[in-house]
Image (cartoon, rainbow, N blue to C red; front, side):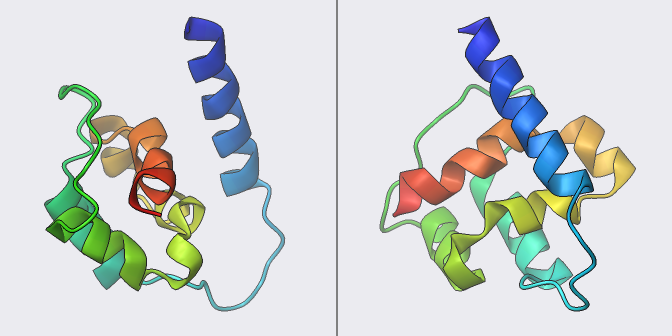
Length: 96
C-alpha cells in the first residue's frame, strides 16, 4: 500500500513539475477553488469516494477532461501542504 502511494506521488510530482510550457492551462484558479471547497481533499481527512451526482463530481466534470493533474499543478505551496494531491488525482476516476 505504501509503495503504491509513493509511486502515485512520484508520478504526480513528475507530471506536475516537468510539463512543457503550453501557454494557457486547461483549468482555472476558479475551478481549483471549487474542487478544494466541494471535495474536501485535506490530508487530515480519510479518503472517500464522492457521490457521482454530488457537488464534488459536478465541480470535477467542469474541468476540461476532468484534468486533476492541472488542478494539482496550480496549487500554491501552502495548499500543497494542506491538501492531498493523491486525493485530488483520485477524483477523476471516482467521478467518471
